[in-house]
Length: 218
Image (cartoon, rainbow, N blue to C red; front, side):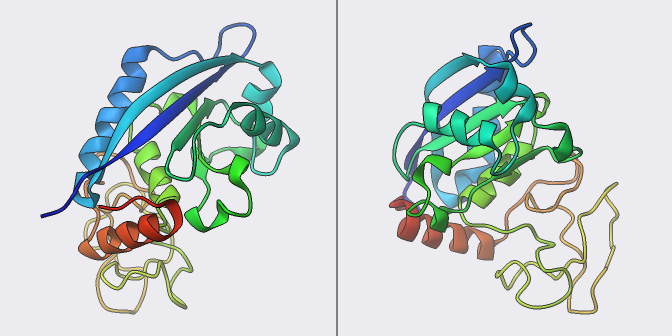
């Protein structure tokens, strides 16, 4: 029987001085519910440990990977250890469009503890963007990682995929390898209405990576 591990979630809502970016408790609770539904097969239960509101206009508008604003934000706010999920909701820098969020991989934690976590465009709260980004936090690659060549996403039961899907294209096959594009997979970039699953191989990989790099056993 699959054991369940509880993952504490520290949610940091970053807002501008004028109020843009503020989220309701209901919106955050809804996102936690969505995460729990998606990650039940992995044996994870996400539990909101704390919601922290930070008003900082620079962090709200200028955060991007490796930016000075992101470094300052995470160093000031991040809580918990490798097993704690920190989510930062913000606007993101204009240079990030149309990216909806990004995350760090588990194996990076020991080299950059303060950088660990998920950064989410605040308007994406309540949908599957967080599910996809938490997948990276758990050690999963996007299904279109490496396109049609190389090891792909390192999971055998997700067919090779050249690029992210759009518009729920049933039967689309962008690579010559066996299988059609996994358009219903959470780790694709498709519309929310299309995505509803992880494969057994992804579940196995996430459980092993979480155990080794985050000390989370399920």
